[in-house]
Length: 125
Image 1 (cartoon, rainbow, N blue to C red):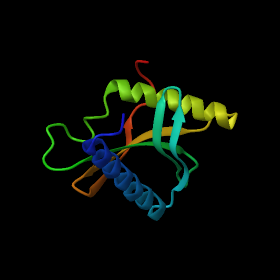
Image 2: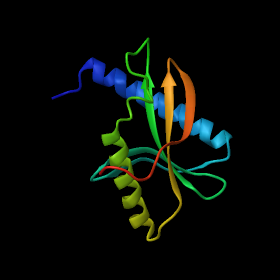
Image 3: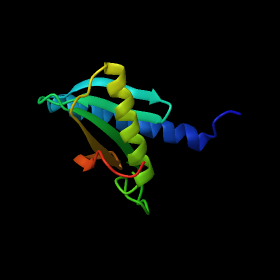
Image 4: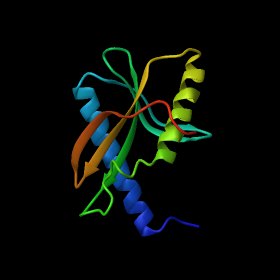
């Protein structure tokens, strides 16, 4: 079944937010390692390496208008647990453990707010 027009609009909004975030990260000295990294546990929007060698798993959340839930609040504990599993999968792909952190890029009406260490690497699975 084809995507609804709302699905198409949401996907376009998400892609623009991811591009905005990737440009922000590059300007701040990050190297984009992967985009839309797919695992059995879900997809990491962006994986970037910081200047200090830390791999940053970035969840990009975009909203327009005056949303009832902020983009940051939309990253639920369940989503955080999935990101932890995605990071483990990424390390397995690399064949070694690396320092990681979990960031959130909140894009509200085209304005980016970036939150480093937005949630911890431990917690419920």
